[in-house]
Image (tube, rainbow over all chains, first blue to last red; front, side):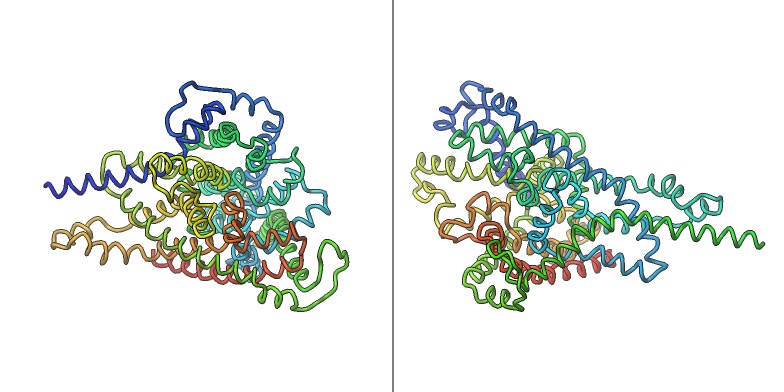
Length: 277
Length: 299
């Protein structure tokens, strides 16, 4: 019995140690953002002696911040729309036709090549293309991002649809339903869970992405995303650590709020893609 | 009868045309933003294109030969090699331990799980910036207060220890996801099997060694390949924390390629470097897919 108890104590001790490693940096971020500049230099770990809201005020009254937030929201929304509108159509067509037609099977593999190729290989030509097409803007980046989500979306959607029998579609077709009508009324609703997974994954990826915005948008401050805003803010704020941490805090809050409500979905969404992608 | 077959033909035609039309938008975006730039990049890597000379001449494999004999490139490869080994070991060992801990039936384990997952939600830039401040200010201050000399200097400012600072930040961000993956693998082990082994008198270590590990192999191999890929492509953390410094000690392949492309404007050489790295990563990803496929067959 005492051995069992010892085991339990050990488990808790380790769990709490891990928890401290996770939470301590977040705690420091949170409390430092409420400290005045002078206090950030002398006081690291304890709560602020006086809760100071100046850092948040400073950022929230800046135009650049709101523009960055809007840019990020636009890009994320466009990517989500791609996941809901374009990718299921592609996934459905490929999933069904690849079993009947060798050309479509080849097409399926073509769509998956992207999983193998690292980002750096397309980085330089992309910058050149985007600048030649005058697409170095949030909307341009958003369209580019949809292209980047194709591989994984195709993989997830075709895999999911392989588990959905064709009987329903055949029955609908005998009743005289057109292919698109069948897709819209029967297949699309059935795909809801996997679409949700894909949307969660891609939204979080887009919201947090650094490299693509860095190469496409960094030169024009009015196009910055939240992540780029943070990245560039460090040099603007200089030694004002309270400001830097307030800026980081603000970008983390929306994600945390969503996580509070969709914890299970986000966890399974992120991990399901990781296994496959 | 005849009408019926005609109707079927019509449906078949509609089916073929609709699926074709439905796949065009997605496929076009993919082709334009992936296939096209990759092909363009391969072409550039065989030219002498840079920002100053606006002309592009075909130079064959020169860029590749230059890259493979370039000390900077080989040094970056070496850095990534070292980094990847440490990163992979860190992930495999720590993520397994965390998953085992989270799998214990203790009170509050779901809360622990939810909190442990937090780092996976944030941008690697956010995470790196937080640790940047912690490394440069909080830890040295702590070191001064307690009087431990090796803590008084930032890990990132010495060329021997900077890699560990980066490693810590990357692991902090990557472990939650990998632990949850392994946890999912742990939960597929039938409980009766573990109970039976315990009734037969197997020690905890024996249960772990002969039941848990074999059941985890498929998951661990996926985690392994993901970690190898992550290690070979590390960019965000280094860009924020050291930007390749101090004294180029942490210049990874991704940083080298980025600098050659956008700071030194050596487009063609950067392309050749990117393609060499690409071939290595593609080979590893291919292995990953084989493993994932095998896994789904076994499951």
